[in-house]
Image (cartoon, rainbow, N blue to C red):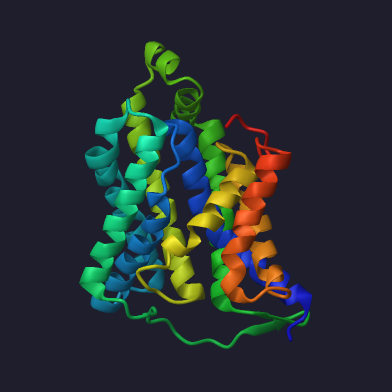
Length: 286
């Protein structure tokens, strides 16, 4: 059996994958006032877009990843315009149910076009390195490095740019922001585009770390939800911290429970946070 440090490292990599959709899920929830469960399926869409580019036009995995960001962001924006925008004034519960329906539709479109087979990217096979007794793969280092850079850029965008400030103002009080001249619909559109792109990029990471199948994103929804709740809704650093904690707990948890019960760890984290600290680690307003 690998040492516990190996499980912790694998958990950090898993946390790096979870962080991107967790940030998207958290920010969209605070901005639109409902949990958009379709975010998890955007991972699947991103992975298959990259798969088409990687296998179909022989694009490198780096170019395929960029393509997945752009196309998945566009898909998320189209979904918002068609499914969620006409329901802006509905109750959050109705929108949450609608997002589950959207996730179901997208998942089955992917299944109809590509089938249920497990697939993988066409990337060079490299031997993992041994670092301080740990087995470290090239893809794992790539995932961690890009995830950290994207999280830093997202935080800088929210804190340092006019659009980021407008986004936070809209999240705090959309009516007041609109009165003050903030183009709230444009802010929502850009947040949806960026959130979808982040989730699509995470789908490529997940495909590199494991495999690609139509259920890959849906299988992560509890973990993404748990990371967003644990970090505090609306906080990008909180979502990153929550994703790392959830990832490590899920991987280390397999020392005591079979992998089939991995999802139960996410459920347990959600229940514990709601009971002990409902506002999450960052203490943002839910």
